[in-house]
Length: 135
Image (cartoon, rainbow, N blue to C red; front, side, top):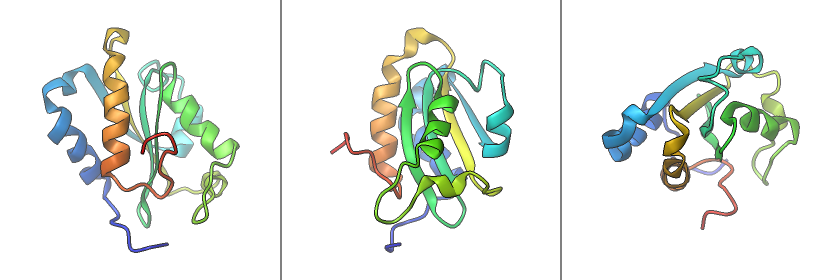
């Protein structure tokens, strides 16, 4: 891997709070293990939002959004093996240290915040696998 800055979990959440603090009450921020995510059926985890794959040695791996279920979409990246020249997400399948940071909206009337939050987090958290659609 290159010499990219690796953000801690707290730094990722701080980026959100710094830029989106004025609307943070419209989101539920959750930081859960991938193992916990797989079996979690709570509505608060299975809601529209932004997801961030994270691991201590890499920092942010992937940022994305789902307008229906952020957890489900995040897990699809592992199943589909989203990858680039540096990293393959299928290796997270059995990784006990991998985390999922979710920024899920509490009310679908706030869906418009997802687009700007995804772009902001992708641009500013230096993911290992940046989004192809965000310049």
